[in-house]
Length: 361
Image 1: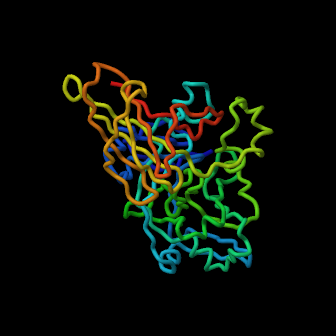
Image 2: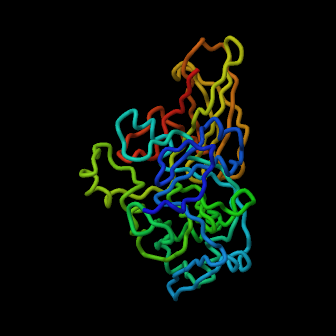
Image 3: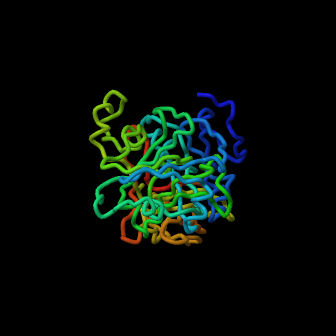
């Protein structure tokens, strides 16, 4: 692939792969901001990152009764602008930790492939309604997203899909976004338009989306059918995986998770701990607890930020009477009473890893 026209990237990110460009911030930097600044938003790519002209960019929507194209000007003027706060998380967050248990395949992300942003754009519901989609007769169908404008590693284009029922449910807040944090999207994050699917893994938030279609089946794209799935633990080679991809469901929501982002000394026998947590889907985090004695006793952290049902949770705690050195664990519990388990489940692609968070001092 040709990377000669690659756009400049933030110099605050830690590069995990150069071509395609994949980079993340440190978790310690992330948790200093409830709304993640543009320069600290991770970059996950499967091809070159190019800049497109929003005056000539066209979005084609293929409905059951024909196709229609929209310019960016039409999308901004013909549909109400809707703003939501939602966390975006890569399915491979914490993959490096899983790789330390047993080797996995994929970019060895640490714990910074997550962000929390204010997204704005048109509701996908409104756009589909405008092209005459009859949801009542297509309840089990899917909305397929595709970006053909940039080359891609494993397929002719990048694609993904979500259930049509999610797209048409106003409470699910699915957007065709053109702004992040009150500014136009940058090329790194999908300029001029991307899909925003709150509560779903980042792989479904297709950047530079240029085609939307309806189908009785999920997207046939590589990244929907042969990636971003939790394969059984006994599947540990590509050869074993070949016959399993079609038997395992595509990832949608990621599990409840928490991460210890920073630990600093406060005097001789105290530490100050900060981190983030994120619920699964639209089930928010209720509390985060910390342990410095391998889980024997737990201390509740103070939640410092939540905003609506789609945001992440920031937390902090001052823990006193701790030894000179040690390990601090975090665990989250959500509003339904589900708790984060001590161990995560290994899988070949290293996705959806969520053991207790862990920090050292």
